[in-house]
Length: 297
Image (cartoon, rainbow, N blue to C red; front, top):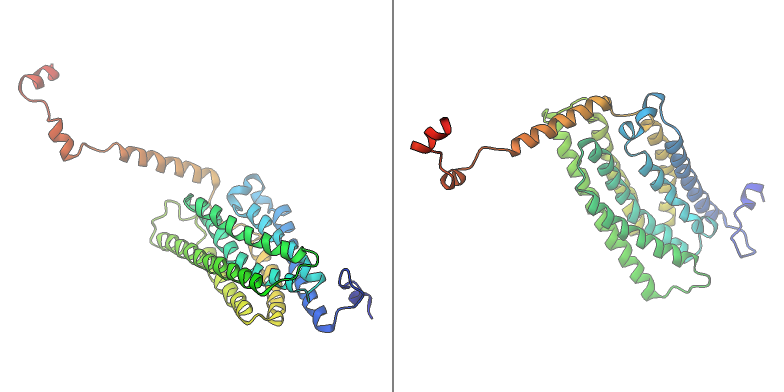
């Protein structure tokens, strides 16, 4: 047997992977490695022109790094793809996380561009639901000697489907919101049309659709083979997507944008100081007669 294959011993056992199991393990390893590579490059690499204001030119850099480091928890499946617990972990990981990741990344990037923060509460609630479910599956996969009963598996499957569908709907809402901003930009309703990355916004909206078309058939078919093929495709996608987002998509100047934002805030404050309404005029009628003459004097 080759040295490469020897690395893939099942921990705690004396038998080797079968050829099929080795393929499953390698596919998951490739996916995890490309995700960690993505996280490292996204964290350490910043184009020279963007180093002075990273949060402006790359508003999603930190979040990308965090989310792309999470797949390291799939290591139980890498070392033991035949384990039922590790299969439930990797089967549940994708519908639980990928559409959620798409949603928060859309909100985080374009929400900062638009200075729209109303997504924060929904993001926190979604994070709790997603990561609580993932931690539960991770604990099941690591629990030594755990016998997963039919009832327990059904319960875990219900959690995977319920939270996964909820995150799919949440991602749909995020896509709809970004599409609204694209429409506003297209009709010149944005104050700074150079600041909103229209082409980038249009191109990334297709990504959640692709992820959904890859992830949900794997879950419905309950197929490790589909999973392996999906992981290879996602690994290729990780490399291509990383290369595409390294240059900043924002062309505006952060100082000019700050001045524009302050100007808009001043205008909004001035509009709040509006003329008295008709009801207020009735309660406080304008001075007449002697009172008017006294005020004029």
